[in-house]
Length: 337
Image (cartoon, rainbow, N blue to C red; front, side, top):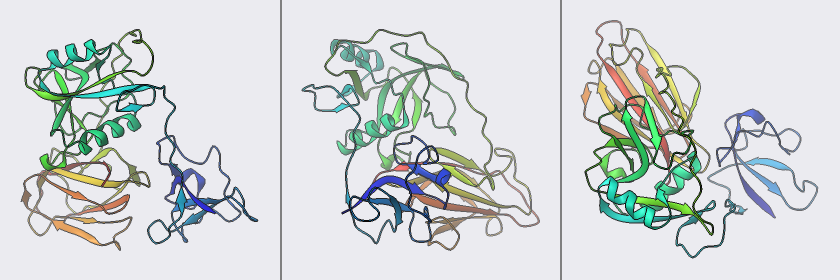
């Protein structure tokens, strides 16, 4: 029997083979057979449970080859809650202002969800989207000043998924959970605390409430363009050089977007202002310009989104020798179809 494992290779190098659960690359440990990884035969990875290659890893074609697989879930505790993940129970509640939503969570011996990893953020976003609950949802984050963040339970701020292209405008935080808004699911945005949004509560599964810890705030990182930066992993953002100031003439920028092997990419252009027909943005559904085209754009466009069929996308920004404008900014994130 041959089994898929949660590993995807961007190149024939163990450091470029990344685990689907965001824990890093296979550089620390691998059991590839001799001559592997070898992406010429495929970028996904499987292993054999019997025969001469028992326990060894090999590459296979992700789309055309079918194999058995085993799903792995985080350890948790027995509880009768309907959404039990990684030691916690999650419940979803109807629209209410932030203070009322937090009060509801406290009655359940919990708080509005404190999100501590990309995997948890993706899980909450997926469950909420599957329930078709709403467009946005309160989480347990507070954003009182542009560079100051805090969790309602005082936990350490060591994971941040604020949309980097949006600025601070209100004190509370919502997660986008529906693509119909044009926002990428899973990203966080500031929102008025007094407005009514659905909410997600989080409490320990099978145990009493945890004690609080001191708040540690994290500064907002700088925003480089990522023009010709090589592979850029999701979630992230790209811009034309100098954005929001004007770009330069005679540019040829390639942006290689990627996410973990089991996901697609949703790319959201928030601003697109270029010289019509002469300064263009071409988007390809794959890891090179030889991949199928998703479109070529120029001029002034209202915000729009593109979704890849696989886990890579290529964006090429070209400018001619005269005329410059503001350019573009866009963000991308993992997307589960």
